[in-house]
Length: 300
Image (cartoon, rainbow, N blue to C red; front, side):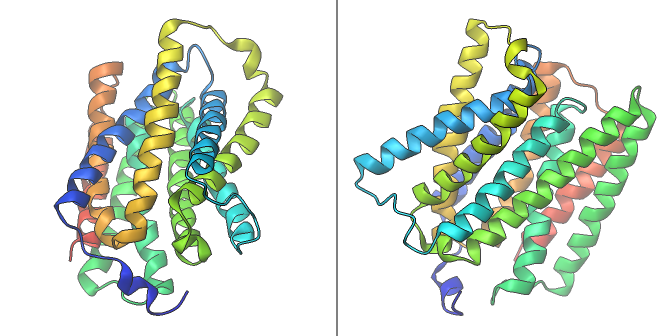
C-alpha cells in the first residue's frame, strides 16, 4: 500500500456516524439472534447457511451491476487470506455461543477495534497511537482480564471460560481481517468483491464443519427459525456488511471504530432483555473497562 492511500480516508461526518450507530444496533442483535435460534439449529450451521445464501446474493448483485467476478485483478491471494480469517472468526463465534452468553460474546468479540488499532499503528502511516491511546489499550486489556475472570465464579465456569476465549479469538481474527484488507489490493476493490471473498470463505469453512459434526440432522424447523435466518442473511450478512466495507473505503478505520463500543452495549442489553441472560458484576466491570479503553484508543 502506498503512503498516500490512507490520506484518501476522511474523518467522520454526520452520515458516517449515523450509519455506524445503525450498524451497531444490527450487530448487537446478531449474537442474540444466533443464540436464540441455537436450540433449533446449531450456531455453526446457522452461520454457514447464512454465509452461503448471502454470498449468492452478493454474486447476483455484482452480476446486475456488471461488476467483474474475475480473479485476475490481483485480489485473489488476499481474498483467500481474508476469507480464511473471516471464516475463522465466525467459526470461533459460532462455537463460542454454545458455551457462553450472547452478551459475553458481544463484549469479547468487539475487542477487535483495540487489536485493529495496534495493527494499524505498525502498518499504516497516519494511524500511529499516541501515549494516551496506549493507556487506552492497557485499559481495554485490563477490562478483558477482569471480565474474563468473572466467568470463574459462575456455574459451569469451564464452559463459560472456553466460550469467552473463543470470543476473544474471534476479535483477534476480525482485526486481522481488517488489516489484511487495508494492506492489500482489496483496500481499493469494490466492497461487494471484498464481502464475497469473506462470505465464501465462511461458507466453505463452516458448512463442512457443521456437516462433520452432524448438525444438519438436529434441525428443529419452525417459522421463527426461518425468520431468524432471514434476518441474519439479508440484514446482517448482506446489507450491514456492504455498508461497513463501503465506510472502510471512504473513512478512517480508527475513526469508525470509536462507535464500536455501542455494539457490545446493545449486545448485552438485548441479551438481558430478550434472552434473560444474567449479569455478573465482574463481567460488567470488565465490559465497562473494555469499552472505556476502546473509546480512549479511537478518540482523537
